[in-house]
Image (tube, rainbow, N blue to C red; front, side, top):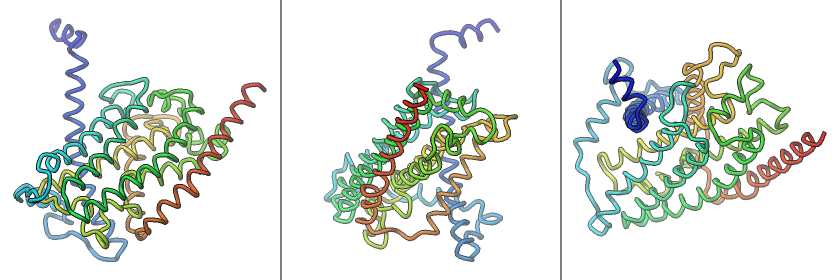
Length: 341
């Protein structure tokens, strides 16, 4: 017993704890990627009034396992004219940032891999690598469709990172901290304390959340902003030359990024693990809010058609950036007035 306590209190324990959490996060991401695909296929079927997957298991529940086996048995081919090293490294680069971001996100008061005072900065620092990995995969393929897609992805992410960061800066001014745990603690109490509904602290709180959520859809390359794939125009976009688990890892990374984006939205705007009725806070409430946001992401994909590329950029540069700047200025003025009143 004493040896166990010495190990837990010793200098090696934080690193062992981090490794264990990372293994758990990888399992969590893999399970989510498998069954969110099932949810998405079933959701698309319901929206289009058809049954969806039904053959493998009851209601098609074993379809993700069958898909995984199929991908694992396929050969990973490298295009003859492509860069072999970069082509193989791109799926690794696209998966790693999502896992590192999830390592900093607290799912409850007791569940979290590591607690950073600057956790929000770490999420955005690692999150910005994702676009570079997609661009690398497209460029290394030496395929004209993949290269066009890579250029689109860079333009899209640069455009939508600006309003997202402006919104996050607004939230930082309101909360006064970059610690994700402290941001959640400040939203304790009933649901009107949540940053998405707290009109006293931010009169444009719902608008702020809508901007963040829209930018999150664009950053994760989800419809109607899925220019990284754009099957009707670019075959499969940046992933055209990838087969087997090479394509599967890109697919898993997309859902990992959705998990990161919706988890961050839950923490910043909906009180994280805080209960909407002020009691019984915990992991249950975090997961409820997280999966409601993920369902909304799926809902939007199968409701709105893909937008044209120039309209996508105009939405950011001409609408979202001015509104997010106005929100930032208004919040600054309010904080200054209340400070001196």
